[in-house]
Amino acid sequence: MDYIVKGQAEYKGKFFPGEITNISLNGLLFRSDELMDASEQEKITIMINWEDEGENTVSAINCRVIRKNDHILGLKVDFIDYDTLMALKEKLADKIGEKINEEFIDFMIGDK
Image 1 (cartoon, rainbow, N blue to C red):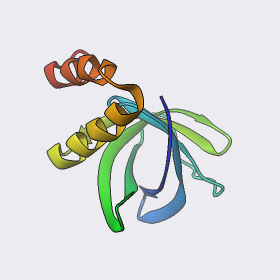
Image 2: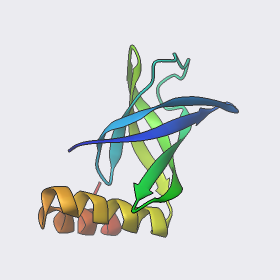
Image 3: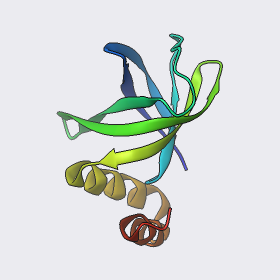
Image 4: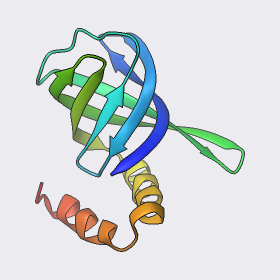
């Protein structure tokens, strides 16, 4: 689903500022004005900057590149910690409602 949030990608020890422009429990699109030379199947860590009620927190999601187009990376989630997963579920539930529960169950039982 379309959900824009600021973040950055860590790739080979370098940081690339950008934004997550589409996100689900299984993957996301990351856009950056800076070019990354990542190839398909390479690992990237995405840091999401959550801004909630004046509080700033950062969550890391380990991903793998599944497609690349100009300044946009299509990423599949490899690993997400529990706290980040719960924060993401809450954010998506606010946007799409009960449908998130089906996706969450599929994610948890490995139907991805």
